[in-house]
Structures are given as C-alpha cells and as structure tokens.
Length: 99
Image (cartoon, rainbow, N blue to C red; front, side):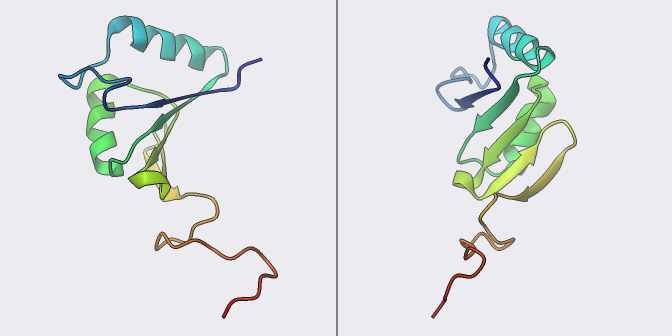
C-alpha cells in the first residue's frame, strides 16, 4: 500500500511556466482522497510554496528550504523539520554529549 508520494517541484512537478498539468493535479487529488500523503520537496522557502499553492491547490505537505522546514499545505502552518531546531541547526539527540 502506498502511503506517501514525494516530488520535487521545479522541473519535475512544475512545468517551465510554473503550472501543473491537469493530469498531474488530478492524480495528486486522487491520491489524497485515497489517504496518500503528497509531499512537495523543494529548496524554495515556504512563502514561495504558499504562493504556488494558492494557484495550484495542492494538498499535503512540503519540505522547504532544503529540508529545514515542513510546510503543511492544508493548514498553512510551518514548523522545523524533525531533528532540527527552530533556527535550522541540527538538534542533538537526547542524551548526546555536546562539546
């Protein structure tokens, strides 16, 4: 059973004119309705993904800023990626010795 579909944005999901084909959009919505989480993966900051999402109507989450942030497209909220601090630095695991 497929639970997650992840796709890069620029040059993969997005066409050169920053649009998504109707076929691709329908496939993403169909997967979402079937309980599959769609994950857009990009180096873009969340504000850029937000403006794209307003035009494209994607659902799911986006991994933004080269993996530093998770943007929930459905609730329009941004949080640090797991394992990162709010400043973007890598967090030490519990019990780790830091110097």
